[in-house]
Amino acid sequence: MKVELVLPASKRDLRLDLFRGLANWLMFLGHVSTSVLAWFSFRNYGFSDGADLFVFISGYTSALVFGRRMLEGGFVFGTTRLLRRVWQIYAAHILLFVFYLASVHFLSNGFSSPDLIDRYNVAPLLNAPVETITQGLLLRYKPLNLDVLPLYVVLMGAFPPVLWLMLRHRNWVMLGSILLYFAARQFSWNLPSYPSGVWYFNPFAWQLLFVLGAWLALGGANTLHFLVRSRAILVLGLAYLLFAAVMTLSGLIPEIQRLLPRALFEAFNPNDKTNLAPYRFLHLAIVIILGARFIPIDAAGLQAAIWKPLIKCGQQSLEVFAVGIYLSFIGYFVLKTISDGIIAQLVAGTAGIAIMTAVAYYRSWSKRVEKSAHVPAGLPSLDKPHAAPGDLARPAERAAIRVV
Image 1 (cartoon, one colour):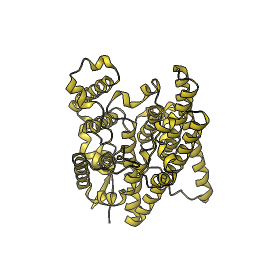
Image 2: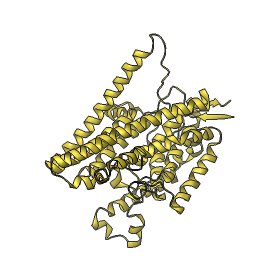
Image 3: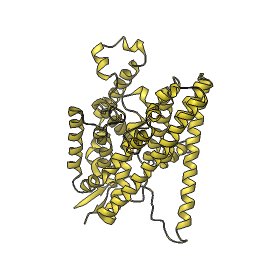
Image 4: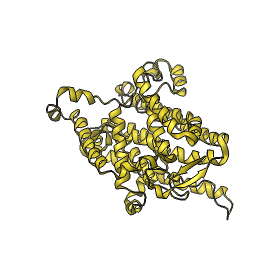
């Protein structure tokens, strides 16, 4: 039995880094929650947004990195590498969780802004601090905007057996993921939240994006490559993206809403993000297909200097994401307290992205220094950059790894 990898092991797909960095920037802008910055985010122009793209790429890169580990060292070795990453994500979430709660409480009291407590869902901390912290450690309690990393922890924590099966029967695992998605929507499966309700990102539904990314990375892209070349898919895809933009904008602009039949408007508004509505999944799928069509892996423009900050943020995604979530709260507080004018909003957005980019460059430099300090001179590093076997690349670029 063999697993087909679509690119040479030394090839790195900069598109993954570029779009993951873009997802981080868009999520930051969207979380600041201001009238101007939201228009620079992905969510106002279609059904899917930066969170969808982030989860999909996370599944893709996880399959690339840890699939190789599992093929080379076996299930136990691959699982230990995966669980180490899960711990890193969990630790980042807890650190962000503590700073976030402390900042909301401090700024709310220090600047007489009690509305921050309710807006950012910090009231449970005041009512039952020990229980709230305990539930936070269990990932059941999540302040506003701290939903993505817990989802990431759960998906990665459940990934070892899924990956092991995908390396052998990827199509059956993909089918199982689709069935779980529809079952979760049909029977309202979700995880409980504290103090009430369910997870904002239903992991039983959102796993579909994560598994789809892994499936494509492990050779599934070859199966669907005809979609990238299809002219019919191009035309229909562009039409659907236009339709999605109109439906989304109709929820924001009353003049557009009045032009639409009421039943049509209500079918897509509000957007079902919690359970990953099928139209939302389709929107991201089309974005991925058209992205692969118009931005091939060897596109010369990917090396342009203008994209380097985005690519760097994508390469240091965890740190940049955590900093971006925290900065979105700080940005909202500053705009609410000092000024929420257009210029102030643009300055806040630019400053936040600049800080996120600086963090990415610092972490990249720091990792290089740490690696050079631990690798003796003349010996190659064992931590190679992730290759990208499968992002709808051409079948002629395949390389095979045999599973023993």
